[in-house]
Length: 344
Image 1: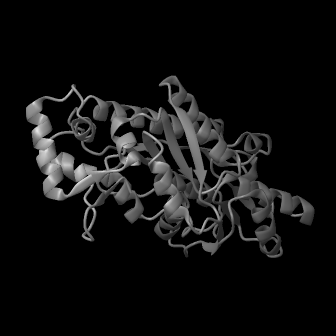
Image 2: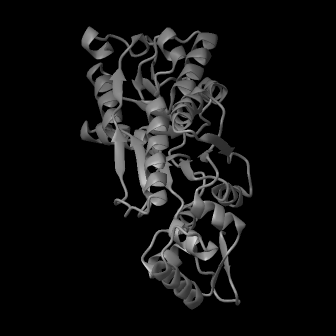
């Protein structure tokens, strides 16, 4: 991306030059530009490493190494819905506090998603990548050029910072509450193959049911928006299970809407739960899980700022960080009886 070799062999990277010379990628850029900020000894070492690797930087590579964009990027699967809006608010507010603007890319429906993400990487000082927007190989290529990266709501990649929220354990607590109230047949409304977070919620639900000697929940794949939840629920509500667990609040709110239209009582005929604790969920009395959406975005922006500072100051980078932000079950009337302690 940010470089090319002089022959048909595999392109060397600025990161490889930095490793061979024992300096940061910012120092490589300064040395190759003849900057007075680099000692003659270091400049010679960098030039020798570049010759040995047959490396020639291009414009985007120089911009990356020098950190001259004053912008951070964030990649989302989609931009529809309040969940992504909350993450963006946390990310943008924190980045702005550090003097950086934010470039946003949504990959939904893009056949060239990988190319667009790599293009964005050449225009920013740091990049947050959410969910399964691109595969691990793309993440590894971007990390190899030294761009500060943070993965959000996604399985870790070696050497890259990762921030997730707790899914499986809290989903087990949700299932435990439903089991305590006598529910035995469950449908999971969402696609575990579509997002790591959704997969974790399904896995936690399935684990709790298995521990109780029950079959795994029936999975009905659907999108993560209200209309998808409403359409999927229409068929389910003809013979409703004991409980419908929505992959997020929008799906669960769609179930509530379909139930109202079909004359099905919640929670009398079926219990319904969601995930995220959107404002609408509170007004709808929806049992759900509180998720720190703004904190997710804010933490990503802060970590990127710290990684960018490491690079600019030629500091030795710390090892890749992993953080799981806590989530919390909140029980409301959509799944029946609850205690004041459960509702807090």
